[in-house]
Image (tube, rainbow, N blue to C red):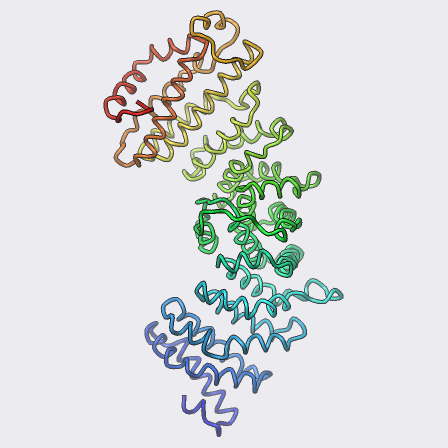
Length: 533
């Protein structure tokens, strides 16, 4: 430290001193030793920045200073005083803003500055991210907004770091909402994503899509669908429960869905595809987002819903890609159009059913697929038959209930699905026998209808087997009380619906099924008085 602060130090000695400090702060033997020496060196920050400003063209001086500054940011997560010293008290923030303001083009020098800024923003806390956004947003945006006469590739050197900075800013709720109202910020993100598509830059593609998706997530309805291994995305999902109305600037960004579809359609990178699908799911989770998709979804070249079906049918290394599609289908249900239901719903049901029946499918995807199948069936017209082999599906579902007998969530989802299937098939039966959806008739009229059609239950004993399993999970101790109660309530509701159905063979099938009667009696003995009982 005395060597570095000496006014008599020649440049050669200065280089050696900086090299020694770099070794000390980046390559010493133990983590604790590095932390201790870095804390001691923080007081040199302004001196190092002065050296950088004095010798800006000398890479033998600038390069080690860059490494030293990045090494200090690694102390941020464990030492708030270091964060505060570097971000608030030193000249670091103003120095980087000043240096980038001097750069007139995307050069190696500006790239080096942005690299360090990325590390600072990434490791700053929420309040510091707000401060850094106010101080740096203009120069960061300027770094990527090249003149119109320049080629897109000119932004390439800076694109990776700018996209990373924007994504990390977006993980802070207050900053994300400010970004959403900034036209300049959306122009910057558009440039980044188009640049990534043209140059097949996977890193920029991931960062830019995540920045867009994280901003949008703060204006969606509360959601717990999270991508594994994506902390910044999860942090966005876990914030405030109350959705906010997005600014008009965000709702006017027509390019977002088109760019997302283009990435999904063209990329071979699973991570980029999953992040795009997560962003689509965030959009579909709120009324404004569904309206946005309806307005801006390309109807001719690459419409969204057929593309989702296409991706669902393909094998993917990342199971979360298919999970996101299932969750998107569930979220989009309120905006299903009649044309789409007629053209695609049966195809989607079959693709989802195949995921459930595939023994290699992970449980998380099976659960998501069950919810999506339920939504698709609910959207189907009452006179539209289910487009798959129900008997084989029920057989597989019964096996899965045995396999996941200690998983209350699986019972919960299956009970909802069976309720939806039974109601749909019974409505289909009524349409076939009566030609309209009249109210349920008295059970004595059922005999007149028996010869005119057949309800699903009378011809498929697998439904009864599934209902028995749902009424009596093998080990209730490992299931939450709420999940069990929901499963029992939905199953009892299904049985009550069947009892009131005009086809009296349903009641006979129920009465003749000893295991079902036993399960009902046993359930009544253990559950408290209430609607389920």
